[in-house]
Length: 250
Ligand SMILES: [Zn+2]
Image 1: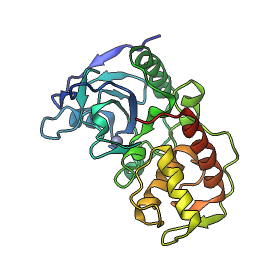
Image 2: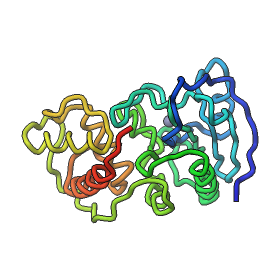
Image 3: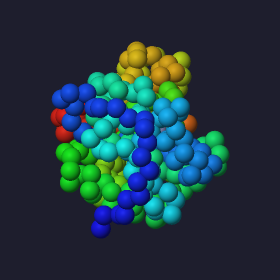
């Protein structure tokens, strides 16, 4: 059933560039102390930020920007060789205080509304499973939302995303910041195949560390350390193969 939509129009949008079609969904958390405060900010002309939708912890859904307009939620972003994901994505904010103000589980009501909404979005736009992403996936050096408590596995089971069922619990370290060599080369290449932007494939630098954190928050939420460990390697191998086999890029 389509959830009831409360309208809270934001002035913070512009036209999508000519020829851009909607093919990705970006999930965020609000990272503020309350949902009202977040809604106020996302509708404040001075803030110059917005999203298409916001979902409160009690499951209420608010629309701020029509889907055919470009909301300003992603900022500087990269995925699978494309920049500026605002052009082609729908942005959804989930109310959660976030890592700064007391990160907590997303409520059942909130995720139920999200899933109902995603069904609607999928009926209106052609969005591949590999295009349901978190803000941290497309801006790993700046963002940590929606974070490791977001139920990516459940979304993927409903057809909204890619998931790996391989055992990822082993946290024995393989590599970390400062390392070089063939393992690092392969690691950076795999991260690139998944879709992440890695600046230098020869070195485990800060950008690799941020990307590992983003990968872990999405696909190996048991341990988000920024260290390349055995569990991360197992999940990354599997996700890389799934992404490679789909053979599609943005
Ligand atoms: Zn965000």
